[in-house]
Image (tube, rainbow, N blue to C red; front, top):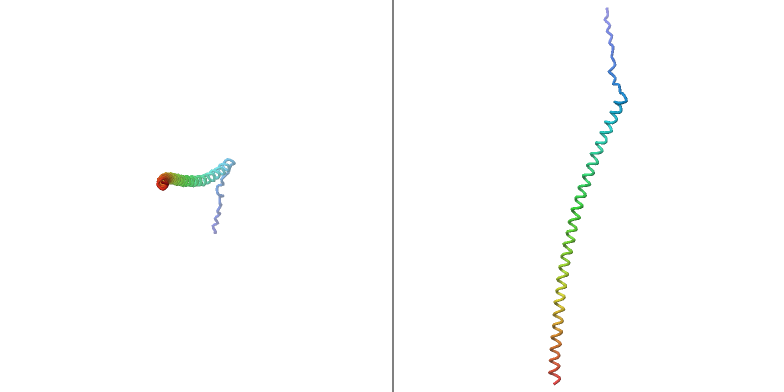
Length: 111
């Protein structure tokens, strides 16, 4: 006698997706996307902040360099103005001295 075996397969338990579980899954996916987007935005914001800080540092250094150069120029101009004043005073003194000497010479030679 042959033995016959019958196998009955029971279907895998089906998950019943209620509208609430489907909505919950969609929300979880959306939250995950938003978190990823937030990380990207935070990263971009940090890069912008670092760039701004570098730019501000560079701008401050340039302003300080221009200020120092302006100060050097002002000091140089003041020194040149002083030298010019001394030279003008010296010229005036020489002219006055020359005029006196000429008067003396002229007076001696007129006699």
